[in-house]
Image 1 (spheres, one colour):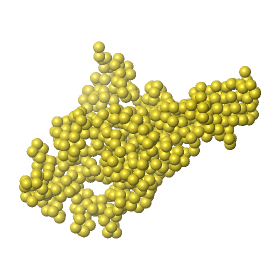
Image 2 (cartoon, one colour):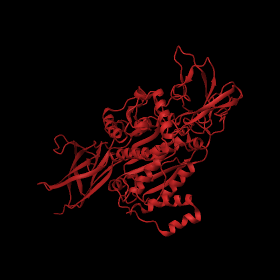
Image 3 (cartoon, one colour):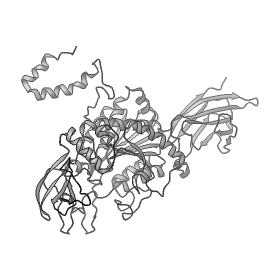
Image 4 (cartoon, one colour):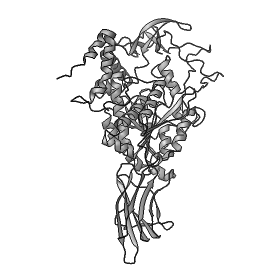
Length: 592
């Protein structure tokens, strides 16, 4: 039987009306959800921090949400600023882990960022959702609780906060601004950012301009006449497309040739950086942008970071490097990427695992390659939202067919909200024209009712990826007294995760030191051995400091075996320390 509402509840209708009654009813639902006989699964019930995940948050709202999470979970997260953006907004970073005896830096770390391309706005929501879900699930979900005990997440929701707010609060298209707000003179006329987009009809969107022209090469689509498509080669056109809305603001005869944010922050990382004439969007020199430099300096201070994901849009892609055909990834590392991505494709239906230079386009100076090649991190770039989401079926991804699906989706599910009808305006250079096309909130990002699922599925892939970071543990430790009076101590160092404690590129470039397995408490260590098998058939002897063995790495889903011959009565302690794989220790009583 449904629970009757209290009498005071009905009194609200007489005093404040139906609108407030609805608001009270909906905001009260989380409070009573735990009492219901059929609680919802898939999301935290009665969260400490209430958030609507069917909308996009601007800088102030995201800042407030991060501050609320930090205040609600003081033992699980810490909020700090990495410094200001170009326009002075704080680059907020949230560290999420169980805070206890083990310092954050000694846990395997996972880096998570979004919004380096500011118009790709749902990435920030995925990152914020991930932080919120982790915090709200600690102590309620056994798997996530253990994850936060063993790992640390470094979460940067907005890598280009200036342009994110520009996209949300100023006239833009779904594609702008891609870069930040550092002034840049694109047309080399001595003035920066003086000829950007102009909202000709004042509707808050930068759509397209068209003019009727029998010599134009575009015609209306037969099913969706608001959409212009190329005329057939032997067919007369009806319209000429003039480009995005804008004037010639600087009188040089060109329109929109020097807009703000017309550089690419994801071409500003040190690995394989190239100048602008080679790599479009490159700016000045590697890490010239204050936002990128702040993030890079944090990452450099945290060699424990073993995994990473960076969120972009659009297309439903799980991308790994290399970005250049001249570059290479180590084969054994590729096997790890393949294993992780195959699970990602299952968690994210319609997403495809791809290699950037081969399956997309060349990228020089990208964050993903810098994280792998110079920090040894297993990193993916995820291009959020797939066309398969439109109608739940595998689709052809050619541009025209995708646009047709978008138009159909808009007609039947958005009820026309996705596009601005063509309207006539006066243009100072072109005269009488029309403007129309997609609104800025449609084309690259999911509509509100699909946003939360996109957040949850991508969060789930992040957590799987993070869970597969290396995690060293001491397995069997055996102590045996030899006939000559020495103690023989044999320990198994296990890593029951997909990733090795050091990637192949890490070992090749000596990015982090080898793992260390040490024995303490002995009067002297006579011999220290390392073996790949428990039988010590071909052990490697470490002659210098044999009590502190340097293990090159522990492979994924495998183990390394160490053995010491020591003098003394103990007690003894065996410990293992790995920059990217964590640590463990065992006390041994050898008095018997």
